[in-house]
Length: 75
Image (cartoon, rainbow, N blue to C red; front, side, top):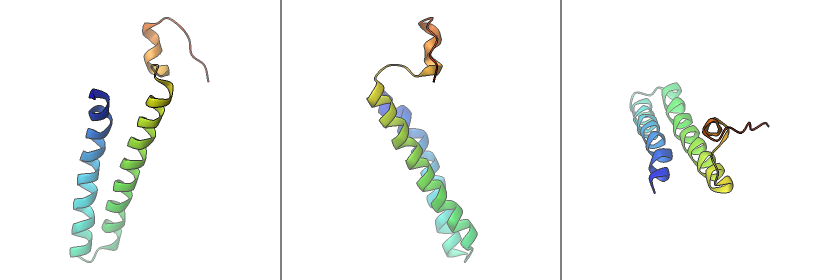
């Protein structure tokens, strides 16, 4: 459960910023700000889901965490 919050808490923070940007962009008639907000929302959720899927598929630590085992992971 801790991994779930570690993955999605930063994503939810970025989504909140994206929602705020999209709302202000729509209210102020600024299409660029609204688009930026929507891209932040989609990008944050995509990265969070991708990270969660990778962690659940492998179950083992990724390459950045391999230094504690002494093994070298390539590829």
